[in-house]
Length: 146
Image: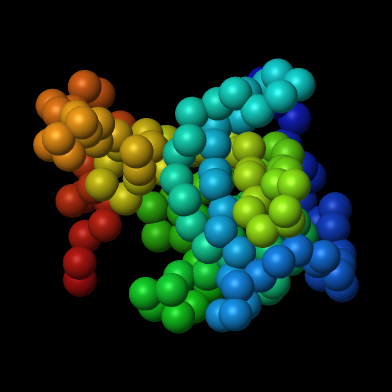
């Protein structure tokens, strides 16, 4: 990977965030492939949520950490699959209510095996079009239940 990632341990957990979190204490996060250019231009890999703790952990470690609404807990991306996301740089939108992270993705971002969670193209009738890319890994092997 050519982009220079944020170094681990380069931020303090005591950072005060002046962002607009939801009533549940969450902020939406768009995650995209690091572009290596001055402006963001990479493929959107996924969408997730962060709370203040997961944001602080992400900045402290340089690895994307999220808040799982379905499991009500923090999760380090790649903790079970090894498919981590190293932070390259990040942005806040003009309203300070959405974050955008550029990352170096290890293997695929989607738990179904694809590079991006946005692999399913739709037509104007909301019908699925054939998927035009191959899976990057076998999700059945990576996420074995046991």
